[in-house]
Amino acid sequence: MVVPDAALPARVRIHEVGPRDGLQNEKATVPTEVKAEFVRRLADAGLTTVEATSFVHPKWVPQLADAEELYPRVAGLPVALPVLVPNERGLDRALALGADRVAVFASASESFARANLNRTMDEALAMFEPVVTRAKAAGVHVRGYLSMCFGDPWEGEVPVPQVVHVCRALLDMGCDELSLGDTIGVGTPGHVSALLTALAEAGVPVSALGVHFHDTYGQALANTLTALRHGVTTVDSSAGGLGGCPYAESATGNLATEDLVWMLRGLGIDTGVDLGRLIATSVWMAGQLGRPSPSRTVRALSHQES
Amino acid sequence: MVVPDAALPARVRIHEVGPRDGLQNEKATVPTEVKAEFVRRLADAGLTTVEATSFVHPKWVPQLADAEELYPRVAGLPVALPVLVPNERGLDRALALGADRVAVFASASESFARANLNRTMDEALAMFEPVVTRAKAAGVHVRGYLSMCFGDPWEGEVPVPQVVHVCRALLDMGCDELSLGDTIGVGTPGHVSALLTALAEAGVPVSALGVHFHDTYGQALANTLTALRHGVTTVDSSAGGLGGCPYAESATGNLATEDLVWMLRGLGIDTGVDLGRLIATSVWMAGQLGRPSPSRTVRALSHQES
Image 1 (spheres, rainbow over the protein chains, first blue to last red):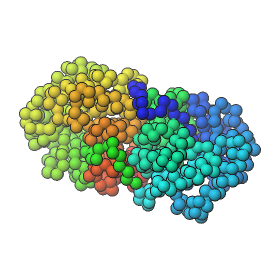
Image 2 (image 1 turned 120 degrees about the vertical axis):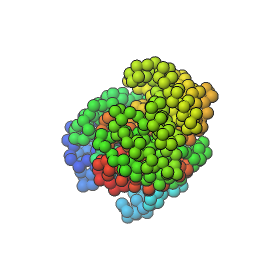
Image 3 (image 1 turned 90 degrees about the vertical axis):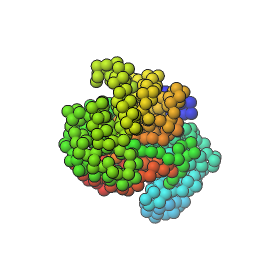
Image 4 (image 1 turned 45 degrees about the vertical axis):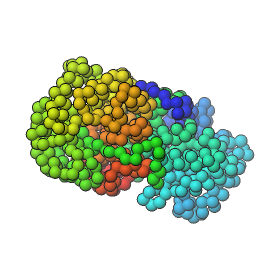
């Protein structure tokens, strides 16, 4: 039953991350043509933004080492096709192929910056400045991913003011939009409210914010609903719930696009997505990967083998 | 991070259904002593209401055929131990053992009554009247389960006024509380709001209402959050997410108690539950059943084999 809620937005833009975030940790190599077909099918299902690949060094993400081969195969599709660029070298590769939307990947956690880059958070942020500056100079749209926006209650949490600080820094650098990531999935609705309230008070326009929740603790949709109440209209998700989870073969990390669409459709919120086509795409991709989709909605509405 | 939300209740009572709803469809017989230990461990983890078993005819639910053996083993625990009684015969059996809380199982869907009982919905409701009347006369607390409160968008949906009608009928019969079930898990937050608003307008006190969401489409926690905003303070869930799902071996039907507790804890909502003990209980029970828990929080925080 479709029952709209006046406190929620009328339309949500889904930022589909399946081909990049969903596949990047796959061990078995997915053929470039399968990836291209995946992107095409997602566009055909009505998704308007499909993050296509990453121009990271192949040594770090071997699965996406074919970015140069993949991007030209999908570049003509009538959808936005952002690509991840970790640094200037990645930006050069993306620009050489004519990419007009890129994303950089920052973190809101000091310990993450220390552990991964042996830098302070501000030093890590400074690394992105030339990437963002050059991308903007080239007329390219820049998304800033911000991981670890919520934290881990067993090992510590990320203070809200710190996340606000990094958001401001990325916007001041020139980022057009930000994606607030709950990378380990521990966030709960009150925390989401607190962060979005603090960002609004700091003058960050909600139109520049997307949310990227993981379902590791089952909280992704409750958190998304909370974000929508704060006026967020960009939500990241992954078709079929693709995306590495260290715990169980078909357990999910990323919020499944189908589960998101199910909720939004019930709320009368327009996404432009044809759920049937999307599920067919995820079932097809599950077949390519040789295991069932972890999306609950895909499981409920498909007859895929489990 | 604990961030309370002033629009939500300060305390929630979890109605734990694992031993009854969670186990009833298990094919392999679970020994009575394992069931008793499960109930004991749940009580020890801080749950205050544990639905212990069902006095249904053994032919229909062979797994719970040991209700007479089980109930006396747990009856002394300092928690509420409701039992399901499908009819007067079941009530007799429960009363003979001294049960002081029973539950009847009605449906809000006309087609369900037709298919299962070959009766109209009102005829089906009339069947419960003597059960409820006699239970109340015996001083027993009666919960009325109401299944199919939301419906299935592929095959039809259950109109809100019809659900309100059945709720009123069950309360007029003498039920002390109702549990609004989304048996097939298709409901979304706007629909939950619409139903709870209509029930309030019909004079049904929210204190008499519990919610029972299934995670078949991943909507259970978003729906629960919505119900809390309407003042609902009783939430049904199943430890470890136990409960039959026809789709995949470890996919969930029932909302997992751990995923619920994770959300409530983050919102500063008191449940009395010790999450660590609860997870240990679900991991132990998963070992008894020979498969991993489908609860995402259990997977994230335990090192169980998958």
